[in-house]
Image (cartoon, rainbow, N blue to C red; front, side):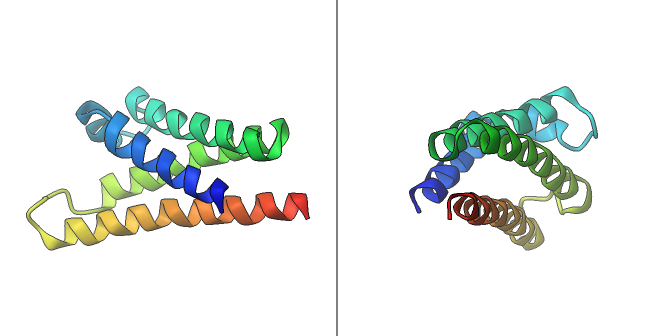
Length: 117
């Protein structure tokens, strides 16, 4: 449970504190360096947290998977979601984006637990 909580805190911090406006806007363009950097920050954070609980091999894999999934979830949101903050669809789609990220963290937790059982 502590592992999952740390992943969720990492997600909040990386998405809502560290992410710049330029990063957020750039995620619309596939392959944009700032969008990639944002996702790499997520992957690095996940790798560090996973290392503490599972060692180097799961840390490497989970960090890589998290960076890839985060990038593509965000890209989909930016390209297929509503961008108008005054439209209620924006907020429901932002919630869906966050749910997708949280489900990834739940899966990482389940897989990490399975490694140690």
